[in-house]
Length: 117
Image (tube, rainbow, N blue to C red; front, top):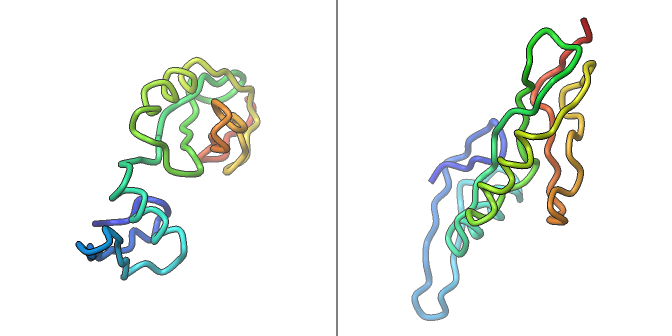
């Protein structure tokens, strides 16, 4: 499987030990890759990409993403909250747009810099 956590997109190999239902991960270049693979095998999750409403910027919406993987069962609720969030330009790349969304410890961050117009 390909890691979805960062732009490096490591090719992960996962081997299951049938005796104790554990997994061995290789191919990851950082600890986040191992975390992603193990969580994907036990509880499918995704980084959520969406857009928030943007005021005073050159466009009406700003692209954002979660800074960690989101359990599949929360994805739709996250998107609903994100799409109804409004921010004002200027916004820096990586700025936290929504902190600790739904008390999960996951932040929603900007994926680009936007200047005020």
